[in-house]
Amino acid sequence: MEKKTVLRKPKGFLDVYKHKPGAEKDRTHYCPGCGHGILHKLIAEAMEDLEIIDSTILISPVGCSVFAYYYFDGGHFQVAHGRAPAVATAVSRANPDKVVISYQGDGDLAAIGANNILQAANRGENIAVFFVNNAIYGMTGGQMAPTTLEGQKTTTTPYGRNLHTDGYPIRMAEIIAQLDAPVFVTRVSLHNPANIRKTRAAVRQALQNAKEHKGFQFVEVLSTCPSGWKQDPVDSMKWVEEHMIPVFPLGVLRDSSAEASVITRAEPIVDPARVIEKLGLAKGPSVTFSRGEIAPEYSKMSIRVAGFGGQGIMSTGQILAQVAMEYGYNVSWLPSYGPEMRGGTANCSVNIQDETIGGAEAVNPNMVIAMNRPSMEKFEKALIPGGSLVYNSTLIEVKPVRSDIRIFAVPVTGLADELGDTRVQSMVSVGAYAAVTGMFKSEDIVGLLPQVFKGRKQEIIDLNARAVRAGYDFVKNSF
Amino acid sequence: MTIYPCPEINSDECKGCGLCVAACPKKVLVISEKLNSKGYHYCAYVGEGCIGCGNCFYNCPEPGAVTVYLKDFQPRKEA
Image (cartoon, rainbow over all chains, first blue to last red; front, side, top):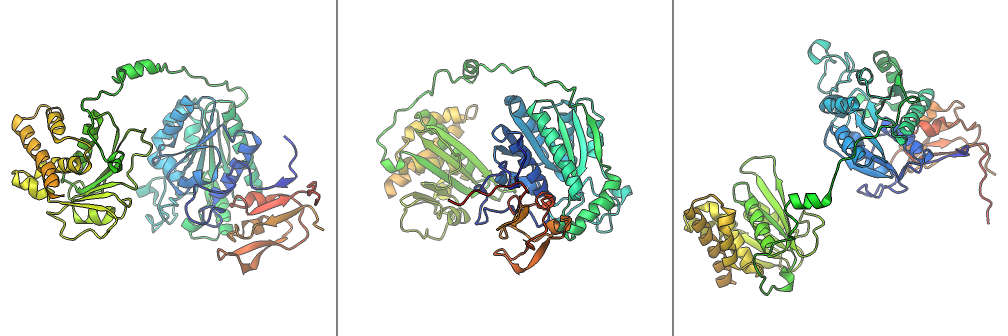
């Protein structure tokens, strides 16, 4: 490598943080003095110098570094809390020629994801793990982490961590180092320039090994959290030296880099033809029904169905997708639940089109089926101009406000109630949808019901058939 | 004429954490009395005395806030 004549922003970073929302695309979201930024820089510099920018896939955790993908060039996954080693395992095995980095904090790696990291380390996965230990949960506001020191005050240990009630600080590097498979295990610190240079060397060693696919690399980095610790950045560096290092001693715990052999794994046998056969896709889409004349504005549908939980919101969406499939469309169905099991709001997105579907969420729908007032108020705004709003006029007493959309007031709950069971609201909505769009014939839907309600009593199927017709006929006769 | 080595601070990217000031062995970096566009007192070079050790670059958590031109840096000739 050529001797550097300038130390500048490494190429492992993106020039402009284009994925970062807001106006500040030239700076990180980290607090002043945050150790993440220092470690990011060392990793980005090593990515450039080792020429692995294009072959690196970085797994971002949950924690303050959740947005690591804003800054680094290369490939990315952002994963569920603690699961970075599991995802890194899959990414590494599917892409054995890539450099896979798992970047994690102490809450992520040593608490919720502790078993994930142990198993990945024990399997000797081809990944480089950078473990940022700042003895606290930073992102959530400074709670106790597994690595919090004895007596350390956090928001959840206001009198200091008590070893007898809260346990001892966990030394992850030592735990990882006593396993057989890991190749390089070290603990370094960012508390002064000399140690930052040692960290730099450790980062480069880990990534060099990763580039050569030499198994599992684990670099624990003692770092600061000035905001969480309520300290000045410079003081927080001293705090690492005085308080953390005595508990988390620095140094290499394992280094078999020189003798480690390249890890290769048996390649899974994936025969696309067999997968297609097993999934029953060999015949291509089966088309049961022939399409009628459809107005151009209804030929490609992006639908949001929304209402209370229990109003059949999800099944309305599922049945729309299921029926459309029988006409040979590509379809998608994506549910979205609130935290409540019942009584909360629920919605789902359905796409129906001839083209391949890219995003399943109906962000700008051309059809909204709103079953209650909050849903109408929320999703009416999202409709594209000229889109259609079908709303449940039994329960929604206000009128829609927009004048640039088509409006269909359908007493969905009332029609279902007249049939003797409000649970058939979803089929009334499906019937109404068919009449508004002309996409489905009501008798086609009815013909599909025995399949939809397979194993149910004939009277249930008949009731649902009446509900479809009720919704369909209401729209046909009223608009 | 600029004398190399020297640091260059991108003042708008600086968050004024002071880690570079603490890391500088020659004490030639200071926190400015001026505020940048984001409301931070940013770091500034006093103009001479840099030895090109790179401490400020490696201690700085912001990717592009500090650039250090080392002794052998050759500025491109003005066209």
